Length: 246
Image 1: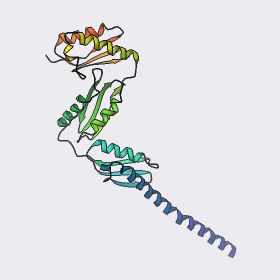
Image 2: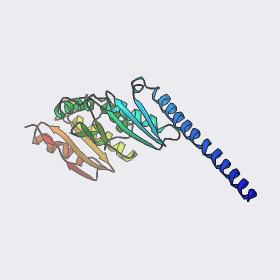
Image 3: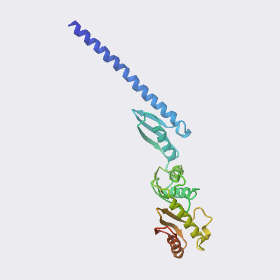
Image 4: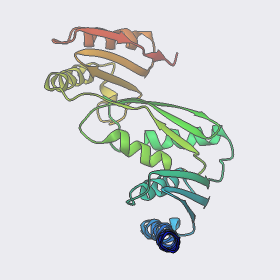
Protein backbone atom coordinates (compact mmCIF):
# COMPACT_ATOMS: atom_id res chain seq x y z
CA UNK A 1 0.00 0.00 0.00
CA UNK A 2 2.83 2.40 0.82
CA UNK A 3 4.40 1.80 -2.57
CA UNK A 4 1.15 2.68 -4.42
CA UNK A 5 0.72 5.84 -2.37
CA UNK A 6 4.22 7.03 -3.24
CA UNK A 7 3.58 6.53 -6.92
CA UNK A 8 0.40 8.56 -6.65
CA UNK A 9 2.19 11.41 -4.91
CA UNK A 10 4.92 11.46 -7.57
CA UNK A 11 2.32 11.56 -10.34
CA UNK A 12 0.51 14.48 -8.73
CA UNK A 13 3.76 16.38 -8.36
CA UNK A 14 4.55 15.91 -12.06
CA UNK A 15 1.06 17.12 -13.10
CA UNK A 16 1.35 20.16 -10.88
CA UNK A 17 4.74 21.04 -12.29
CA UNK A 18 3.42 20.93 -15.85
CA UNK A 19 0.27 22.82 -14.85
CA UNK A 20 2.26 25.67 -13.34
CA UNK A 21 4.50 26.07 -16.40
CA UNK A 22 1.74 26.30 -19.05
CA UNK A 23 0.09 29.57 -17.99
CA UNK A 24 3.16 31.84 -17.94
CA UNK A 25 4.09 30.70 -21.47
CA UNK A 26 0.61 31.62 -22.80
CA UNK A 27 0.72 34.97 -21.03
CA UNK A 28 4.16 35.69 -22.40
CA UNK A 29 2.99 34.83 -25.92
CA UNK A 30 0.01 37.23 -25.73
CA UNK A 31 2.21 39.97 -24.29
CA UNK A 32 4.83 39.49 -26.97
CA UNK A 33 2.20 39.49 -29.74
CA UNK A 34 0.71 42.73 -28.45
CA UNK A 35 4.18 44.25 -28.25
CA UNK A 36 4.94 43.18 -31.83
CA UNK A 37 1.66 44.60 -33.16
CA UNK A 38 2.20 47.92 -31.40
CA UNK A 39 5.72 48.07 -32.78
CA UNK A 40 4.41 47.49 -36.30
CA UNK A 41 1.77 50.21 -35.90
CA UNK A 42 4.35 52.62 -34.55
CA UNK A 43 5.80 52.89 -38.05
CA UNK A 44 2.85 55.14 -38.98
CA UNK A 45 2.47 58.02 -36.53
CA UNK A 46 -1.33 58.25 -36.76
CA UNK A 47 -1.70 54.56 -35.85
CA UNK A 48 0.11 54.83 -32.53
CA UNK A 49 -3.02 55.91 -30.65
CA UNK A 50 -4.99 52.76 -31.52
CA UNK A 51 -5.84 50.33 -28.72
CA UNK A 52 -4.65 46.76 -29.26
CA UNK A 53 -6.24 43.69 -27.64
CA UNK A 54 -5.05 40.11 -28.07
CA UNK A 55 -7.07 36.89 -27.78
CA UNK A 56 -5.01 33.93 -28.93
CA UNK A 57 -4.00 34.70 -32.52
CA UNK A 58 -6.76 37.31 -32.92
CA UNK A 59 -5.99 41.03 -32.76
CA UNK A 60 -8.67 43.67 -32.14
CA UNK A 61 -7.89 47.27 -33.10
CA UNK A 62 -9.98 50.02 -31.54
CA UNK A 63 -9.95 53.80 -31.92
CA UNK A 64 -10.63 56.61 -34.39
CA UNK A 65 -8.65 57.45 -37.54
CA UNK A 66 -9.07 60.24 -40.07
CA UNK A 67 -9.24 58.15 -43.27
CA UNK A 68 -10.05 54.70 -44.57
CA UNK A 69 -6.49 54.53 -45.90
CA UNK A 70 -5.13 54.69 -42.35
CA UNK A 71 -7.65 52.06 -41.26
CA UNK A 72 -6.65 49.67 -44.04
CA UNK A 73 -2.98 50.37 -43.30
CA UNK A 74 -3.50 49.49 -39.63
CA UNK A 75 -5.14 46.20 -40.56
CA UNK A 76 -2.41 45.39 -43.07
CA UNK A 77 0.35 46.09 -40.56
CA UNK A 78 -1.33 43.93 -37.93
CA UNK A 79 -1.56 41.03 -40.38
CA UNK A 80 2.15 41.43 -41.14
CA UNK A 81 3.02 40.37 -37.59
CA UNK A 82 4.01 36.71 -37.21
CA UNK A 83 1.41 34.78 -35.22
CA UNK A 84 -1.56 36.99 -36.15
CA UNK A 85 -4.27 35.02 -37.95
CA UNK A 86 -7.32 37.26 -37.48
CA UNK A 87 -7.72 41.03 -37.24
CA UNK A 88 -10.96 42.51 -35.92
CA UNK A 89 -11.39 46.20 -36.71
CA UNK A 90 -13.42 48.41 -34.40
CA UNK A 91 -11.81 51.51 -35.89
CA UNK A 92 -14.17 54.42 -36.55
CA UNK A 93 -13.81 57.08 -39.27
CA UNK A 94 -15.62 60.45 -39.03
CA UNK A 95 -18.38 60.46 -41.69
CA UNK A 96 -18.57 62.88 -44.59
CA UNK A 97 -21.12 65.68 -44.69
CA UNK A 98 -23.11 63.75 -47.34
CA UNK A 99 -22.69 61.21 -50.11
CA UNK A 100 -23.11 64.06 -52.61
CA UNK A 101 -20.19 65.95 -51.11
CA UNK A 102 -18.13 62.77 -51.08
CA UNK A 103 -19.01 62.07 -54.73
CA UNK A 104 -17.67 65.49 -55.68
CA UNK A 105 -14.38 64.81 -53.91
CA UNK A 106 -14.01 61.37 -55.50
CA UNK A 107 -14.75 62.85 -58.94
CA UNK A 108 -12.02 65.47 -58.39
CA UNK A 109 -9.49 62.79 -57.51
CA UNK A 110 -10.35 60.81 -60.65
CA UNK A 111 -10.31 63.80 -62.99
CA UNK A 112 -7.02 65.11 -61.60
CA UNK A 113 -5.29 61.76 -61.61
CA UNK A 114 -2.14 62.47 -63.68
CA UNK A 115 -2.17 59.12 -65.48
CA UNK A 116 -5.85 59.20 -66.52
CA UNK A 117 -5.69 59.16 -70.31
CA UNK A 118 -7.83 58.96 -73.41
CA UNK A 119 -7.61 55.17 -73.21
CA UNK A 120 -8.83 54.77 -69.62
CA UNK A 121 -12.37 54.92 -68.27
CA UNK A 122 -13.25 55.54 -64.61
CA UNK A 123 -16.58 55.57 -62.83
CA UNK A 124 -17.86 54.94 -59.33
CA UNK A 125 -20.78 54.60 -56.92
CA UNK A 126 -21.20 55.85 -53.35
CA UNK A 127 -23.60 54.55 -50.72
CA UNK A 128 -23.37 55.57 -47.10
CA UNK A 129 -19.77 56.62 -47.43
CA UNK A 130 -18.76 53.34 -49.10
CA UNK A 131 -17.13 53.94 -52.48
CA UNK A 132 -17.10 51.42 -55.33
CA UNK A 133 -14.53 52.18 -58.03
CA UNK A 134 -15.38 50.99 -61.55
CA UNK A 135 -13.79 51.16 -64.97
CA UNK A 136 -10.92 49.89 -67.10
CA UNK A 137 -7.36 51.19 -67.28
CA UNK A 138 -4.32 50.50 -69.42
CA UNK A 139 -1.55 48.34 -67.93
CA UNK A 140 1.34 50.80 -68.31
CA UNK A 141 1.17 51.82 -64.61
CA UNK A 142 -0.37 50.41 -61.42
CA UNK A 143 -3.36 52.69 -61.88
CA UNK A 144 -5.98 50.62 -60.04
CA UNK A 145 -3.99 50.43 -56.79
CA UNK A 146 -2.88 54.03 -57.12
CA UNK A 147 -6.48 55.24 -57.45
CA UNK A 148 -7.55 53.05 -54.52
CA UNK A 149 -4.97 54.77 -52.32
CA UNK A 150 -5.93 58.27 -53.45
CA UNK A 151 -9.66 57.71 -52.90
CA UNK A 152 -9.08 55.91 -49.57
CA UNK A 153 -7.28 59.04 -48.31
CA UNK A 154 -10.35 61.26 -48.84
CA UNK A 155 -11.79 62.25 -45.43
CA UNK A 156 -15.20 60.69 -44.84
CA UNK A 157 -14.74 57.60 -47.03
CA UNK A 158 -15.77 54.60 -44.94
CA UNK A 159 -14.75 51.82 -47.31
CA UNK A 160 -13.43 51.34 -50.85
CA UNK A 161 -14.36 48.44 -53.12
CA UNK A 162 -11.90 48.48 -55.99
CA UNK A 163 -13.45 46.95 -59.11
CA UNK A 164 -11.25 48.76 -61.63
CA UNK A 165 -10.05 46.29 -64.26
CA UNK A 166 -6.51 46.51 -65.61
CA UNK A 167 -6.53 45.57 -69.30
CA UNK A 168 -4.18 42.72 -70.22
CA UNK A 169 -1.02 44.00 -71.94
CA UNK A 170 -1.13 43.55 -75.72
CA UNK A 171 1.15 44.96 -78.41
CA UNK A 172 -1.73 44.75 -80.90
CA UNK A 173 -4.00 46.81 -78.63
CA UNK A 174 -1.23 49.32 -78.01
CA UNK A 175 -0.73 49.80 -81.77
CA UNK A 176 -4.48 50.25 -82.23
CA UNK A 177 -4.59 52.94 -79.54
CA UNK A 178 -1.88 54.88 -81.32
CA UNK A 179 -3.54 54.54 -84.74
CA UNK A 180 -6.99 55.52 -83.42
CA UNK A 181 -5.65 58.58 -81.59
CA UNK A 182 -3.83 59.82 -84.69
CA UNK A 183 -6.94 59.44 -86.85
CA UNK A 184 -9.31 61.06 -84.36
CA UNK A 185 -7.18 64.11 -83.64
CA UNK A 186 -6.60 64.69 -87.37
CA UNK A 187 -10.37 65.14 -87.72
CA UNK A 188 -11.61 68.72 -87.65
CA UNK A 189 -14.28 67.61 -85.16
CA UNK A 190 -11.75 66.59 -82.51
CA UNK A 191 -8.56 68.57 -83.19
CA UNK A 192 -9.32 70.86 -80.25
CA UNK A 193 -8.88 67.91 -77.85
CA UNK A 194 -5.49 66.84 -79.21
CA UNK A 195 -3.49 68.49 -76.42
CA UNK A 196 -5.71 67.24 -73.59
CA UNK A 197 -4.51 64.19 -71.63
CA UNK A 198 -8.01 63.60 -70.29
CA UNK A 199 -10.66 64.67 -72.85
CA UNK A 200 -14.42 64.30 -72.16
CA UNK A 201 -14.57 61.11 -74.25
CA UNK A 202 -12.61 57.89 -73.69
CA UNK A 203 -11.64 55.00 -75.94
CA UNK A 204 -11.23 51.54 -74.41
CA UNK A 205 -9.28 49.06 -76.54
CA UNK A 206 -9.35 45.47 -75.36
CA UNK A 207 -8.54 42.47 -77.57
CA UNK A 208 -9.11 44.67 -80.66
CA UNK A 209 -12.65 45.55 -79.53
CA UNK A 210 -13.19 49.28 -79.03
CA UNK A 211 -15.67 50.85 -76.61
CA UNK A 212 -16.41 54.57 -76.90
CA UNK A 213 -17.54 56.26 -73.67
CA UNK A 214 -17.97 59.77 -72.31
CA UNK A 215 -19.36 62.89 -73.97
CA UNK A 216 -19.27 64.66 -77.34
CA UNK A 217 -21.00 67.83 -78.54
CA UNK A 218 -23.72 66.28 -80.65
CA UNK A 219 -24.84 63.35 -82.75
CA UNK A 220 -22.62 64.39 -85.67
CA UNK A 221 -19.50 64.02 -83.51
CA UNK A 222 -20.85 60.79 -82.04
CA UNK A 223 -21.24 59.20 -85.48
CA UNK A 224 -17.98 60.67 -86.79
CA UNK A 225 -15.92 59.16 -83.99
CA UNK A 226 -17.52 55.77 -84.52
CA UNK A 227 -16.83 55.99 -88.27
CA UNK A 228 -13.16 56.84 -87.70
CA UNK A 229 -12.68 53.95 -85.29
CA UNK A 230 -14.50 51.44 -87.51
CA UNK A 231 -12.24 52.37 -90.41
CA UNK A 232 -9.07 51.82 -88.38
CA UNK A 233 -7.32 48.67 -89.57
CA UNK A 234 -7.32 45.93 -86.95
CA UNK A 235 -10.50 46.95 -85.11
CA UNK A 236 -12.86 43.97 -84.78
CA UNK A 237 -15.91 45.68 -83.32
CA UNK A 238 -17.04 49.08 -81.99
CA UNK A 239 -19.41 49.58 -79.05
CA UNK A 240 -20.55 53.20 -79.17
CA UNK A 241 -21.68 54.32 -75.69
CA UNK A 242 -21.00 58.02 -76.28
CA UNK A 243 -23.48 60.49 -74.87
CA UNK A 244 -24.20 63.95 -76.27
CA UNK A 245 -24.50 67.29 -74.48
CA UNK A 246 -27.01 68.58 -77.01
